[in-house]
Length: 406
Image (cartoon, rainbow, N blue to C red):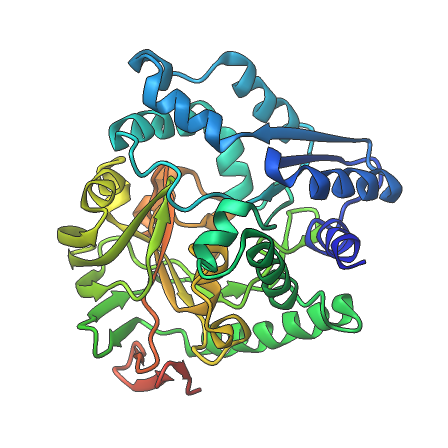
């Protein structure tokens, strides 16, 4: 059964759960059947405990629409304790990312912004540990009816669910005869790309395409290209995103200049932002526009000071498995793996040599951005060109016509 096979892949390869380790599963209530499969497999593997933190987006929408303002300015102490207690016990965290892309379209974005700030501030230790790969984590998805109908609006709900399941199985290689072997090969292919880019040691990348993107991104000294699997400090291998097709690094915080135009809609906090563009000067967004979701984009950029700077540069071939499906998923986990993308906000400290040993002030001094948010958006197109510039001025075509040219 593919559902069981997928759940096993996430626990045994994505999380790579160790015996006597706690597994924390964050799941929408619509995904209960799948979450229970995860629990069953987790205990079979030898988990010390498997804990589920349920979410209900319909409840959340009602709460945002009708609850008093004060609700969104603090995080209940029990929720803070939940995250901090488990992260300090070396728990692994599996997040099932599945939501209606337009669930919060009528919600005041100020309320969402307030709660996002409160949550991030209260559980900053949890977020920092995951972004520094101190704890094992993995993000994956399973269909929900509202999400499936958004992706496949012209068929019945049952047909949409079936089609989205099949697309996800294909994307995560569950349809392969041996998914684990397929993932091992895939990790090695991504490692070859990483090694090539790290050997180049580019000083900057210049993006151009017919949408109007003309963006120069400087890279910090000592930057590292990463992708595929990650390692905790004690050598526990895991895959943070399933699927993943990207290799990524951090840009230099104050070294981004020019204009970038989005190539896909962004699902941000349950609302869509589409047809948007950003103009950067010395790293910061100084001008922006959006055909859909301007207020949501404004709130994203105003989350904190670091939200208007870039924290990630990720390369994905246009000719890649997810892109070739020709499906707009309205889910960043999938859409970002069909397209080159950038991220506003916090950079991964591990994207620079020795970054996992640096405090925040040292990271900033080395050009690594900080923020309570990290939001990916897609910029890749069929005609995207990326030219890398080395320290000696030599120019190298990294991407041509949307694909790797190295």
